[in-house]
Amino acid sequence: MSESNELEKFQMYIKMKKLSSKLSPTGREAALITNETNIRYFTDFPNSEGSLFVTRDKAYLLVDSRYGEAAQNKVTNAEVVVYEKYYDTLSKLILEYEIRDLLIEADSMTVSSLMNLQKKTEDTGCRIMPNDRLDKLIVAQRIVKSKGEIEKMRRAQQITEEALTELLNMVKPGVKESQLAFELEFLMRKKGAEGISFDLITITGKNTSMPHGVPGDTEVRNGDFVTFDIGALYEGYHSDMTRTYAVGQVSDEQREVYETVLRSQLAGLAKVRAGIKAYDVDRTSRAVIARAGYGEYFRHSTGHGVGLDIHEEPFVSARGETLLSEGMVITVEPGIYLPGKFGVRIEDMVVVTKDGCDNLATLPKELTIL
Image 1: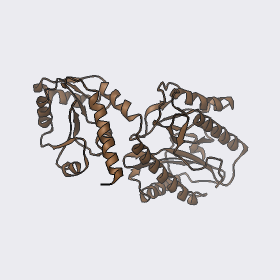
Image 2: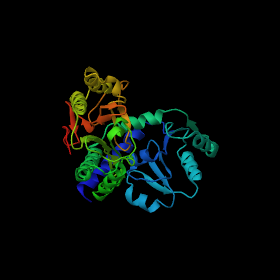
Image 3: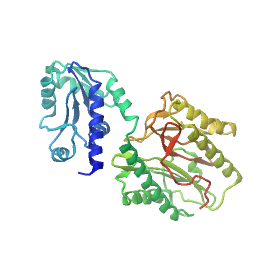
Image 4: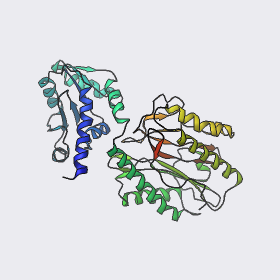
């Protein structure tokens, strides 16, 4: 087995150990993880059914027969249990370990699922804990990325940039927004992406004034801005990047707005470092736009965390109280949106470091006229 595979196995072991060490030392407390993304985080195994049952001393990945062989070949930090009747298997584990308190993911478990879990396990005498303790434990782990996670995100970013660079050759008057989105997804998959991070935003003209505009039949015209808010998925991890280009020519107003957003984005990036609050980055970027007279047209937060989810902690907003730490991955994406006219957004995904940040994006940001 290669050295990189051995390192990844060790990192998965550490992830699980960190979680189990937070459970009660009495051994009578367990965590039940049912969120697909969280299961993948702890086991590196994607599946759409089952759960991860974690005790102080051992973890079990419960899957049905569709995933049994694949899970047994992949998962090294949990015992794989192929069940016929899920709740019978779960109840057996609860009784075997004499679990009295079972932590659940309050943020992702539906009321109906909770009620069903309580009903199906009531004979075990175990209490289903109706609080967010497990959610907080998981967020605290996921918010700081390992070197392996960062490298996957770096690769996702590389795929995104390679695809966009190739696509720019077809950005010209007459091409439709929907065509750009279709071709971009094709290129990402061709270059190694397992999918796209979200529904790609490839919009032009007046549609760029909508931060989350949906690509349609609008055609690119000479003098338009074209905004690409895009990302690729690689081994479960996302990238997120926005670039705005001009076609043919730009007006003085377009140039002024673009340069203002660029100054705002660069100021925000310069503010990023370990030890500051997330809201410091937001305030820094926002102040540049406000001083230029466009404050009311910056209508969203400055950024967010990225990882196995495209939007996750920490949130870089006016209310972002999280203290940035080394290894966190965030976006810095200020924008100005003039209703009925046009909009500009520039976004990079960066890794927080002790003295600044490691920018995973490499594409130029200076105003480019195609």
